[in-house]
Image 1 (tube, rainbow, N blue to C red):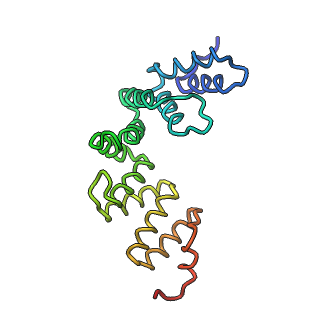
Image 2: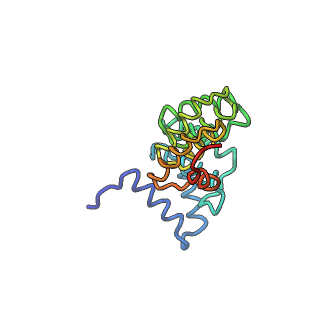
Length: 195
């Protein structure tokens, strides 16, 4: 007797079947129907469909905005913390107060991309009050989670403040993590004294 598949294994098999070039259009539609409506995968199926919507370069499934929003709410209903990030992205231009709340919830779940989005919003005063200190901290959290853009955001803020020692520290930290910050940064590290 064969061992029953876990939910994750079943989801992976469904996606592999959908990717198979020999899978018929009807089979692929059946898989999409399961992906859209099943509550057996702890929201991971809905997150996958949201990723298809946000990464339109050769997605496995074509999802429109209305369906993406539905998938976000289904994933939220299934307590998938990543749903808040995608709901933020879907709602930030249409329903800013809801988008703010979803972004806050996602940051509370320590989602790296949410830290980065929060930092950008706080840095520029978009959806949230401008708060450079909190923005810098969120860029730092994103960087600690391995997001290159977190280092770039911290460096940008240090550049805006003309803080050359901090710029150098950020460059060195990024280098330790294997990130090379491009552009004028190389010039700053080679300078002997700030102007």
